[in-house]
Image (cartoon, rainbow, N blue to C red; front, side, top):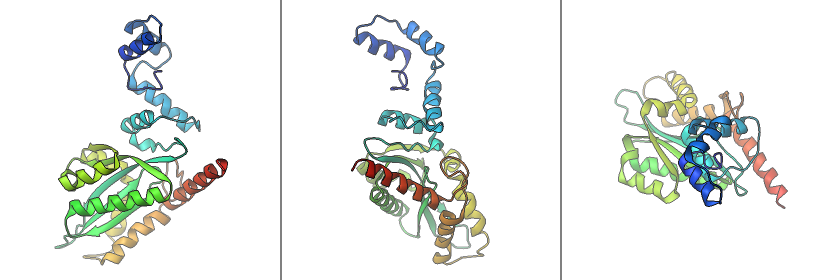
Length: 251
C-alpha cells in the first residue's frame, strides 16, 4: 500500500488498513515501513525509481507517475499505462542575445527522449508559447504519447491568463519551478544551442537558428536514461518501435 500511494503518511496508511478490518496504529505502521526501508516518502519514491532503472516493467498508476515526476522529473518516467505511453515536457522562452534582437526562441523538450520542439517569435510571447504547446501536444498524440506533466518557470509568458487557460485544456500536472532549477531539466539543449549560436555571429537569420535545433535533435549525443549516448531523434525512433511492438501484441 505504501508503494501504491507513495505520498501517503503512516496515519493515512493505518486508517486505510483499519478500513479493511485490521487493527493497527499509526506508530506501528511507521515502524513497519521503517523496517522495510520505506519510512519516508522519499524512500518510497526512490524504491519505485529503482524498479524502473532495473527494467521492471510493472504498470504504474497515474498517481505513482505523477509523484515520481514531482520527486525527480529527470527520471523521465514513461511507462506502459492502459496501453499507452506518457511523458514529461519542459517549456522555456529564451531571449536571443544579439544587438537590437527582439526575437525569442520558444522551446519544449521531452524529458524522455530529450527531443526539442521550437519556434521563433517577435510577437506576443504568451500566445507563441501556447501555440508551441499546442503543436507539441498534437505531435505527441500523433505518436501515441500522452504528455502527463508540464514544467515551466514561475515567470515570463507562463504567468499570463492566455497561457494558463491553454494549459487548462490538457489537464496536465503543471509544475512551475524557479529559473535555475528549471534550466537543469533542459541543460543538454541549452548548452548545445548556446555553444552553436555563439558561432553564428550577430543577428543570424531565422533559418540558421532553427537549423541549430535540428542539429541538436539529430547529432547531439545525450548521456543518461534512455538515450545512453544516443541522439534525441534515435530515442524517439526507439519510442516508436516500442509503441509498434505493444500494438502488435494487442492484435
